[in-house]
Structures are given as C-alpha cells and as structure tokens.
View 1 (cartoon, rainbow, N blue to C red):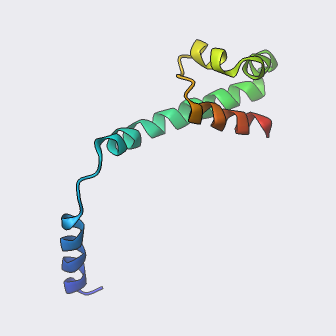
View 2 (cartoon, one colour):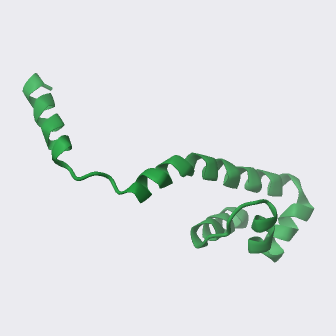
Length: 83
C-alpha cells in the first residue's frame, strides 16, 4: 500500500459519521457479558442442580445470578444449554 493509499483511507475514515453511543457502550460491555454467560454455561456443565434450575426457569435463575435476562441473553443461553 502506498502512502497515498494510506492518506486516502485516513481521509475517508475521518469523513464517516460518528459511531452511535449505543454501539460504543455495547462494545465496552460485550466482553464482560460474554465472560458471564460462558461462566454460567460452564457451571451448568459441572453442577446438575444448577443446570436443572436453569432449564426449569432460565429467567429466574439468571436474575438470581445477577444477570438481566434480556431476550438476546436468554436466546443465547437456551442455544448453548441445548448442545
């Protein structure tokens, strides 16, 4: 890539509109959320009683763990627990 290409790309990037604040916040929160969900799935694999509680009432079990049971979170965990 030539210097001209780099300068052109930089100029085009500067011309883009600002990223919506919601995207920035989601990008900041995503790693922790992913870690929490992975931890829940791992615990369910080790603890049959916890897994049974998750399967019986996923939303209540998530609240008990301090996780907001949003639609995407619940759908993601249901898929992971069915595997």
